[in-house]
Image 1 (cartoon, rainbow, N blue to C red):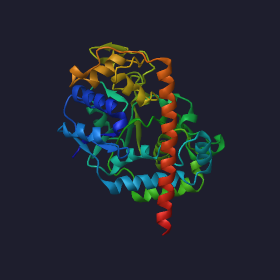
Image 2 (image 1 turned 30 degrees about the horizontal axis):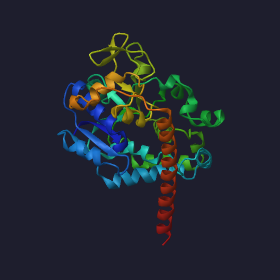
Image 3 (image 1 turned 60 degrees about the vertical axis):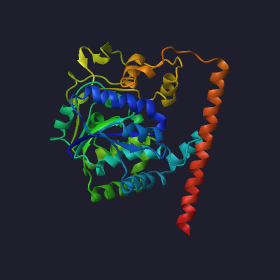
Image 4 (image 1 turned 45 degrees about the horizontal axis):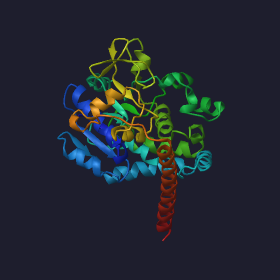
Length: 346
């Protein structure tokens, strides 16, 4: 295959996944093969959705998944500052480890691909992105480089300056929720070299709150592969993409000063908010009607006809239940890691 799209998902983001798939079908301008990378084994709804779509498949290369899980584990398990921070925050030992599975696209069926987080919506054709990959190894389209560097790298300024070229650092940082690249862009020698540098102390520059994003930015900057960001190199024509921006809506397409967005990103809005919205709860989500349009594009009869606000008691119960479930999940993950380590020692 040549061009394709990868999405990382499981049943927890099912409503967002359906909305994204429908937006791609409606706005991409042509049928593009899509491959869903499993976040974990919670995939019953996802698999049923895949079965209903001719151009969508499930990524089932267990060797690739294991490789990138192990790669990320080797990066983070010996990074003491991250481990300490995650313990203090009550997070698992390897926080957000499955988010690194986005890198499975580097081993997948598509020669050139665009990665979408499930919390995005496509607004226009993306052939121009694939064409840019003819000249560059990694392509993005966001304004992350204008945000504070601490969201990408929060190590000491001295170490950051020692590791990275300052000019590239100022212009090449990106949000890992959307990017485009090519198959086998990193050789095994390059990956081994990056891992060696990280384990030798360079991991100290990385931000603990967004491990996958920090690691991906490190890999791009440190490897020196060619990079292009439409929002930097063509900022006069580039549009925003974050939900907090003020966009115009015309026929369920978002516009930024008269130009169609490439995609809308609901970054940092909890997936539970979308689940509750689709369950008929009156949840305030930016561009809510646009999301609902794409979520129920193929099943308008299932779209909630009215929305109700839960009582304060119900909100308290949901908050408590969510906290307890998170603690249970953390305990399960710690037990699984302990069991894996015990098995390795036998």
